[in-house]
Amino acid sequence: MKSERTRALIRDTALASFRERGYDETTVRLIAHEAGISLGNAYYYFPTKNHLVQELYVEVQREHRSVAVPLLETSDELIERLGIVYRSGLATLEPFHAFAPGFLSAAVSPRSPINPLGDDSTEARELSVGLFRDAVGGARHSLPDDLARSLPEVFWLGYLLLALFWVYDSSPGRERTLRLLDRGLKLLGIALPLARLPLLRKPLRELVELIGEVRA
Amino acid sequence: MKSERTRALIRDTALASFRERGYDETTVRLIAHEAGISLGNAYYYFPTKNHLVQELYVEVQREHRSVAVPLLETSDELIERLGIVYRSGLATLEPFHAFAPGFLSAAVSPRSPINPLGDDSTEARELSVGLFRDAVGGARHSLPDDLARSLPEVFWLGYLLLALFWVYDSSPGRERTLRLLDRGLKLLGIALPLARLPLLRKPLRELVELIGEVRA
DNA sequence: GCTATGTTTTGAACATGTTCGAAAATGAGA
DNA sequence: TCTCATTTTCGAACATGTTCAAAACATAGC
Image (cartoon, rainbow over the protein chains, first blue to last red):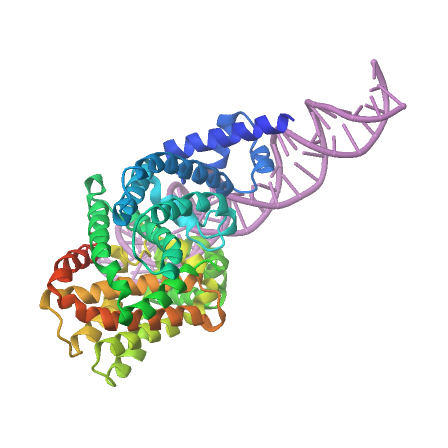
């Protein structure tokens, strides 16, 4: 019974510290100390420091969702809708940019509990993929059905890559990432209709399917 | 004078251990012990465990180069030549696949001494990028000059992404990665000539330039 | 051979994530 | 209220990468 309160206390303390100090500087000892509990006790509730980061991920994805969903009402054009999701995503991440390297290197390992593709991240991932499903689903377009079905996963993976670029982006205001996004979307807007050309269609479909299989 | 011998001893011991045990299981204490020196002494020669990994990278790139260069003699077709470089690269990496997650998470942080985009990695990177310069330079093609000049860097980045996919690939014999490569190359073979279409040319050039700027 | 200077080597120390056995608190049933 | 099993809490311990002051060694100049 006390259980739930202690757990929440640890969680909240940890998240506050991650937001303030980032991944590396947030030690489990520090969390425990700030929460007024012992080191061992923190590990009674969370098997790993990274499991605490997982909580942060879910919170951030919820935040993204709450910003993006209303904005999606404003357009039914696929590229515009993608732009909305990507841009609001980057905006949500921005406060973490200074700490991004720490989080990245903890998250990138396939077996890490906070790897976005891993089982432990299902909740956060579904929140995020869902956004891309909304973006594609609510758009008028004339894409082949099989392609349209694979696209949300592919766009979500594109989001991970964009975030990777963003981590490395030291330009002021992350203008480089934003420009990459603009140009990528523009090119996509031109190239996507070409997907109906018989010549391109088959290899593109095969490629897209394979990419959709990344997590497996 | 003794200096050089000790340094080489540490280096060789470390590389052997990385090849055998991977990144995580190779502790600096273990290296020191196997080399018959003290822990502190290892740090006298290499400021960081990762600086030892850097030595491994250079060796692996040299290996890749020595395999790929002769193979490049066999074709002057761009896509084929790219295939040669990519495939021989994956083959060179294969013995490390089991340990790849450890290396990846140490390498991915922008400020890590073994980040492929960082200053410390210049030697290994130049070896690798050079291979793509060879592949593009020695091929007959009819691409706009500015594009052709940016392509090696872009293809090299593509190589990093392919390697990222490869790390996550648990399929037997890495067949998934090889299929992704095949299909990507096929699509590239079809799509690249389209780069001359006036409509696609400008946005593509802008995108390619931006991507070439990743490390900056 | 001896001393002074610079190089190389050592091992103890630190902070970190994590584990674990034991102590303390809790609460259900008598 | 007391007992005892369960849940919760604690803090010492471990292995790791890294730092550092001091010891050991080598050598040049006398």
